[in-house]
Amino acid sequence: MAQVAPGSETALRLVAARVGARLGFLRGLVQSRDGQPLRASVQLEGRAAPVPVDAAGRFSATLPAGRYVLRVSAPGHLTQVKRFELPAGEQALFHVELLPE
Image 1: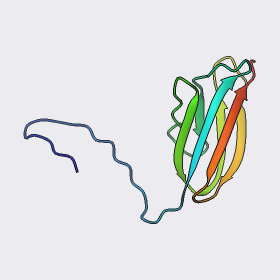
Image 2 (image 1 turned 180 degrees about the horizontal axis):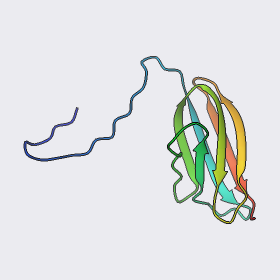
Image 3 (image 1 turned 30 degrees about the vertical axis):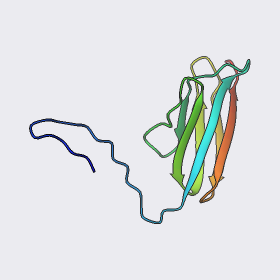
Image 4 (image 1 turned 60 degrees about the horizontal axis):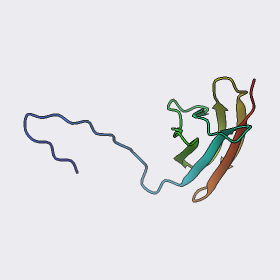
């Protein structure tokens, strides 16, 4: 529940999920070959929004169970593509080391 004073405005971020949806968890870390964190682009094919990556190179998302294609890229590095299946209630963990171009 959000309360907004009369005459004022606010922005809300809403997340919709089906009741009883079978969810899994994607987590990972993106680093360069020398172990430095990379603020990479992490994208799931078929989904418009990228998975957020923090300054330490970590990313996470809660997703419906299913099959996915993960694309990880960063400027000056070779892109990696990983296919995986995410069962309900499980985690998919990735340690991605991107090589220089």
